[in-house]
Image (cartoon, rainbow, N blue to C red; front, side, top):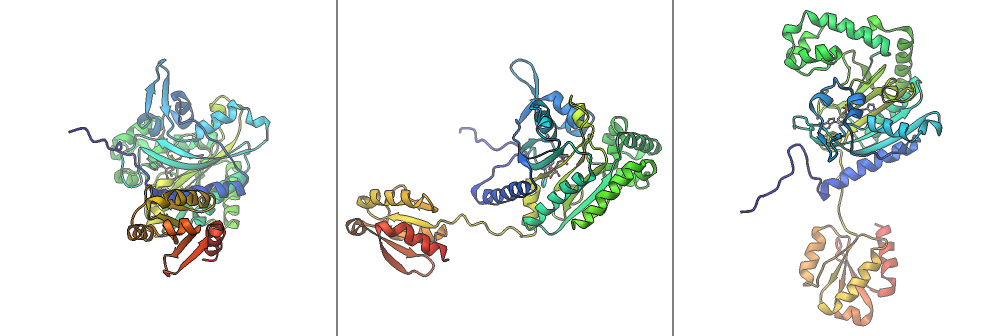
Length: 423
Ligand code: HAM
């Protein structure tokens, strides 16, 4: 027996029924981004491994454990992108986009790859939508980014979402905080999981983000960042919170929120949903004022977020907030005799210029075709037999009421459009 192929673990196929829902939430994302003045960028799916080592951060779990890395035929090390932010910054620098405008605002979407442990809402190939605002240190940019994410999720009808925000302070505050947390953790090493021992050495702040129960308990009374925040960082975070309230974003401050990537400075945030839980965010992001420089550019502040489409779909389904997206047809063209197929074929071609039309690849008995038409939820069936060809007409049957009307061939399109418009 020949081998049966299956999608690789942690990947999934998107079949027509579900892809309509995906299309809707992707379109809603593009729409809201355009309303806020963002332009789309599309960046490659693989890049030099070093881009992610320097960008995402050499010490992160993503780079240490989860990247799909391979040599190309010339021995260069490449990686499938685990996230979009480093690629967007590379493109920004490579194309000198800072010369075009002081502040650049981009949106993007596409597949990302992480060798994660597959589970509910956790895949190895998953899909993100995201935005990046590059070139401004203003807290108002943080507010816009968070508000856009919030409004996006509300706009696609998700209700049960929560938003938590925090500040990690600027580079200096963050370094001081990291030292403080390290000192605190020294006495708790025995309670930490193996990964956290590693994190303790690589980046102690990441221990605050560990999901293991014993680690969560051990860090229960870890020092909060407030002790080391300078005045500017405090003022920045205050303004972010003040305007988020004005914008109507329902958020709370979570002092333990540090995020899984290393580039963040100052504001960080995550949205979550009861279907996936606080530990499995729908989306997240923050400010990253050092990254552009880290990737070879001039010192340039930036802020952004990404959200995972698989998790958004899970949440929509849990809320039953996804209206059943009908794949239905406007009209099913049924040729019921071999002699009428060519006539039906030409009619379908004409109707398809503006309507959703189904045409079988051969003539079949009327009952069979009417059954197929009603199964796919077609509004009308156009029945074409030898009589209609002779008279140059079309018989339209309204599938719900069963009413029939014979219409001249030349009027068929306008007649149908009128009827459909009125439904
Ligand atoms: P992230 O938190 O690593 O941030 O990922 C953002 C979102 O991607 C998560 O909230 C989640 O919805 C989704 N995601 C991550 N891993 C998986 C997975 N294995 N399976 C399914 N979904 C997943 C970033 O990627 C940053 N680039 C966000 C950002 C943009 N920060 C600044 N700008």
